[in-house]
Image 1 (cartoon, rainbow, N blue to C red):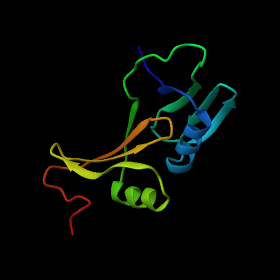
Image 2 (cartoon, rainbow, N blue to C red; image 1 turned 180 degrees about the horizontal axis):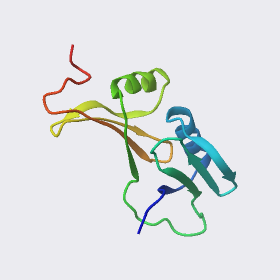
Image 3 (cartoon, rainbow, N blue to C red; image 1 turned 90 degrees about the horizontal axis):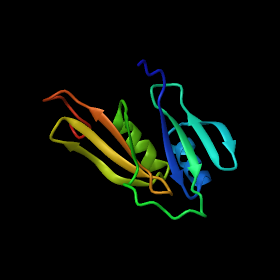
Image 4 (spheres, one colour; image 1 turned 30 degrees about the vertical axis):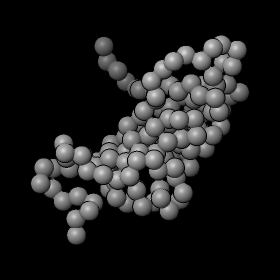
Length: 129
């Protein structure tokens, strides 16, 4: 098998609010917007995102909270930009013991977006200085 692309699919109550979140704060662009489906993409290594409208006629399934994680560069700058733009930051910038910087955003439909930056052990991080 040779995987040539990746797509993350989220079933949400309000695709328009998720579209606004991903295009406004995370620089995704709209490829397709249909009544029950929105397709978002970027020109880098991020997977495409499909936002499907939840079928309100069917009972809501019990599922785990959706999380998508993006490894980024210069997370400190991104953290400052997102806060300045009023993005819904729900997990502050922090350093984990395994040499990763992490912050979280949560979109209006409950999709958690983790932004991470790996740092070399003993490397300088965002709070150095």
